[in-house]
Structures are given as C-alpha cells and as structure tokens.
Length: 320
Length: 266
Image (cartoon, rainbow over all chains, first blue to last red; front, side, top):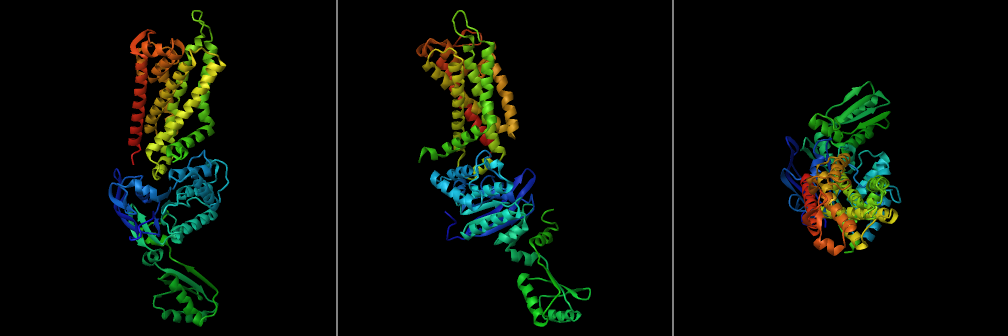
C-alpha cells in the first residue's frame, strides 16, 4: 500500500494554491517528496503549513493546482488517499470522555482493523509511548500524554505516508525526545513522513530534506546541510590561546586554509575565525591547528543554523 | 463483517459510551422530563368522574413527546462538538465516510431515545399507575415517540449546521424546543391552527389517541380521525397523521444532512 516502487516520488505537489477570500494562504507551491523520506516543512506560524497539509490530507479543497499522493489526486481520489495516510493534527483531537485505549481502538476500527487486532496493536503502541494502562479519560491527561495519544491515533493503522503537524509543540524536553525517537523509528521502517514544524532544531534533527515556507511560498529547499551552506552565512570559531605566540602560529596556519578568508583578533590571545562549510571544515581547522599547537585555553564554535537561513532569506526571525 | 465491526455501529457504541459518561447529558435528557412528569402529576392528579380515568393520563403522551424532543438539543450538541473541535475533520482523514457518521449518530440517538421513553413509561405507567388502553397500543405509542425522536435529531442536525460551538447549539436548540412544544399543544392545550405546523402535535396526538382515547387498534387505524385543536375530529385519519409524521421525519433528516454537509463542505 506504500508508494509505488517504480516511482520514487511519493508526494508530488503541483502549483498548489489556496485562497481564503483575498488572502493567499498557499501561493503556488510545487514540491516532490521521495518515498521513505522525512521531509521537514519549516516556517513561522501563519506561513501556510497547516493549510498545505489540510489540502494534502484532502480536508480542504485547493483553489487551483493539484497534488498526487502515491499517484492519487487530492482533488478526485480522496477515498484512495485516506486509506494510505495517517494525520497527526496540530491540536490534540480526540474524544475527551473516552480513555486513551478506547480512542485508539475507535480510530483503528475506522480504518477497518478487526477489533481483536485493534486491541493488540493499541496496547503495543501505547506501551511504546508510555501511556498504556491509563484508565482515566483522555481529557484528564497531562499535555504531554495528550500529545502522545494524538500521535498514536494517527499511527495505529500503520500508514505508509504520515503527516505530522507540530507533533512536539508544547512538550517538555523529555517527552519531546521520546517522540523524536519514535519518529526516527518510523522513518527507519520506510515510512514517508511530512513533518510540519516551526522548531528549527526539530527540523534539523529529524529531516532528510527541508523546505522553508513563508507567506504561502517555498523560499528555500534542500538538505539541512545544503540550506545552511547556501543561506546560513558563516560559522564562527573562537579560540583563546594560553600564549601570545600561539596566536601568530595559528594565523600562519590559517593562511594555508583556502576556505578561511579572514579572521579577527580580540585582545592579545583570542582569534575569531569565520568560515563556510559546516563540520567538515571545522574539523579541518582543528587538524591544522593541532599540527603546531598542543593546547588552547578555550574554544567556542557557533555553527550556523536554520534560524540563520530563515533570517538571511526573509530578514525576520522564525518566531517573529 | 461482524455487526460490531461495522463502522456506523462502532460510532454508535462510542457515542453511547460518551453520553452515559456525561452526567449533564443524562440529567438533561432524563432529569427534566422526570421532573416535569412528577410536578404535573402532583398538580393534575384528579380522577375524571365521567370516565374514572386519572386526568393526568391525558398529559403523559405530551410529556413523553417533550422528553424525546430534547433529542434536538442532544443531536445539535453532538454534531456541533464534532464540527468545532476538529473531530469531524479528523474523521474525514480516515476511511470513515460521512454516511457512517450520520448513521452511527442516528443509531446512538435512537438508542438513547429508547432508553428515555422506557424510563418515562416505567415512571408514568408502572410507578404512577396512569391509564392506558392496552400493551399493544402502548407499543404503538412507543414507536410513534421514537419516530418523533428521530425527527428531532434531524432538527438538531439543522441547528448544528449553523452553530459555531456547543454553547450556541444548546442555546439555539432550547430556544427552539420550548416554544415549539408549547405551540404544538403537547404539554398544555393550545387552541390555534398553528399546532398543525408543529411536529410535536402529530406525535402527541397519535400517541394520545392510541393509548388513552382509542377503542382499540383496528378502530383507531381504520375509522378514527385525528382530533384537532378545537377538540373535534378533523378530516385526517390517524393513519394519515402517521404518514405526515413519517414524511416530516424524512424531510427534517434529509434537510439536516444536506445542510450540514453544505456548511462543512471541504
């Protein structure tokens, strides 16, 4: 039931537009998402992420354009698409007066899974996400438990294509880690995942490929490393030496490194070295330094981030 | 496929589970009619010297009609909640199908209505000992009430189509139910032609004529006419009244579903 093997494109979005009266919520988006890929869609609140996901999951009709989910059109083949997908909405949506188990079994049965199998799958999955055996009604759960229940409800039928809309919003770091591990596990099983988030760390940590969306348009598209290299500006390495003499030695060493164009001196024993190229080049600088210098007092490395990418592309911060 | 795994049945069972876990729903659906039944019983508990029948027996059909009319509020709240909380949209991303959602809710509301009617029957006939012609006539009364309850659900769906949230749905439904019940003459006599346009009138009148006023099933079905607001017979036979009630039920359910689908169009 997954994406067809011959074609590696699983989700094909073709010039998709959604207008709400005069507002263009999604403005001509085209994207291809490959089978088995974890594709992050990163953008600030109101960028059009949720509108896009609602169209892809067939709950909102596009104003124009089309998208194919496993070759099925979102406009005309809704019934085929809903059998393939799992959707974890941004808000926790479930029946408040049912327990976690009852909610998940209900969803499983809506997907046509027999009752006995629904129960078995539900127990296993609730166990995995740490909310098994909770007999109280879902409305009495903590925020983290509600979020995890929301996620389990979208996965119980083992969909091959998964849409996750801010799956860790509002979670504490520990709960967020559990969900991240779970998402990685799903990816490991070959699921195609479209992850919508405004959390750059989440997008960076989980995604194979990222598209940045702003004002309903895709403004950048690539792997996290590509985006950071291309749009993220420079990384900065700050080194403080014990001896002034080491500063001079280091400057000589830097002259031999092609990707380091300049540096700044702070005080008498600190060098600030901007460079492009990510971790690979960072290690090259360290290697060059270690050829002549055996000890340093302090070292700080600030790697460019997706936040920088967004800032450079839009002139705004992601959370503005 | 096993019956219990049919999607509409799964939805119905889920709805019932939720309803019976909400004391507000139980109190609203059961408490109000029981309270009115007892109050009216205490107020009008006199024996008619001509017939020897407790006067309150004539009010029972209206009281039960009022009880099932609350199905309007219940359905309006259920559908509005599903719409406003995003549950409906979530169900739309699954291979559920709107027809299963409507059918499941109709089944669950009918089961709750059955429960309501049975409780009212027990209270009125078994506990308070009110008069009725016979058990078969009582069964007809039960079926007519259930049919009217389904009609009420249809009106509830129409209200849900226009309501933004549960509070609004509940308010609109109550604002609708009480005047309609009084304008239909179901609870207290209302001498106006308006009653003919009010669905509760038909339910209450058929129920009353079968279970209290009638001379048996055959006589009622073939030779009795509906009694109008002036307490005189109309030209409409009882079976005609039943057909009108059935037609109204289909009409309101149809309009409700069409409107709800239109208002929640994707």
